[in-house]
Length: 69
Length: 459
Image (cartoon, rainbow over all chains, first blue to last red; front, side):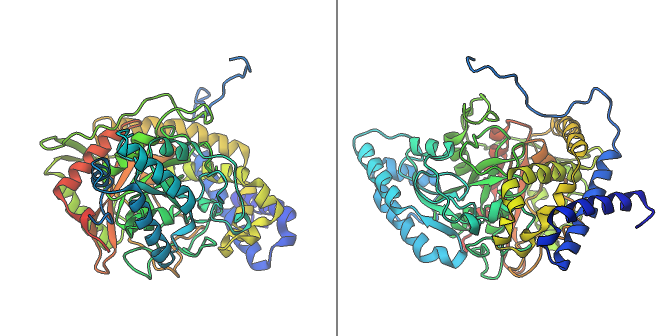
């Protein structure tokens, strides 16, 4: 295991993915998935590096529902 | 009159004047689709029976003086992710090749109401590319082939929509874009392709790849034709909550003498192929004949990471059944058999962070676009790649600020031809506008096509 926090995160997340799907994948496919997880961790790091305020809401549509409206 | 390679505008006039019969039109294009479609791997299903019923109805109505409008009696093809009652809708995926719905997608229904004639369901990259394909052979119908070279890809994921229009197999087609799937085939096939504003066109009955990024739009020979088609398919729809009540009427007025304000990101062509850079440099000079061109900058944000996080997270959910069941092992592209599994590693808080950053991107894009009629850029950074070649490294994603910003902010864009490479492959120019400004970018693209002849070249 690497000491680098980002690598540790990637290792942990890959372990999760492998536990779910590892039995159906070849070693070569697993290695590709491992690299894919590492790329996603890098991607997440880019998002986390941007500071937002508490008031910055996500863009998503939500409207309470009534069947008669 | 030979109807092949004629713009919808010209065909419509001939149909209205009864110089051309809708039935003859349908038969002409059905024949071309049948004979030439396999050359481009463009067709999934010919819809001959339905087409001839629609064409005969159109012919009768027009003869009786009931002309519905410019699409009446005009044949078209639909990307095979749009539901069509009783006709297979495969989503390009081998495990779903027998999938059939019992209703028409709203876009199909609207085109029927406009009198258009559905002649084919057109090939596409499996699941619209949502599994992470990275080479052209990613559909059970084979790799889409560009009309300009038997060795070059037609682009994706609306592969058949691009090649069928570019090869004169249909006058227009409907495609979809989540990130690049209309602009890429338009660029690689040397035609015009319009990505409407998110919410302009109902997606009811269309395969969902990513609910907050998916758009439907036309591909055609000219920008004007794209406007005609958008006029028929735009509008609110109770069956798609994202489709907004914001009426659209295509304004096809003459652009002669109109001066446009174009913005351009300083480094937008920096990583493009030399042929694309050369075409783009010439295009900027030409654009100065119809307006001003001014450099613009965007704030430093991780645009591609934001869009990609939203796309991957939503696609993982949209195709949860296929992924969890292992059915993706039946897909055509080997990389699609395992790539999606990694997306279980996207954390909920990172997806939400991407949705929060999306608000910043929307404001930043609008700030940058507000002084302009459009931002211009290469339609694609490269010409059509060879069929056997990987075109992206999934572990080192390429920069695409226009695509990332335009799609995550839901902005309209149109790609039009702007030249050719030394290998004879088309290059492309895109105009991206503020939200709901389709008429503005269509006018700019029409003005472009009034001073250039790239869109008149045929393979």
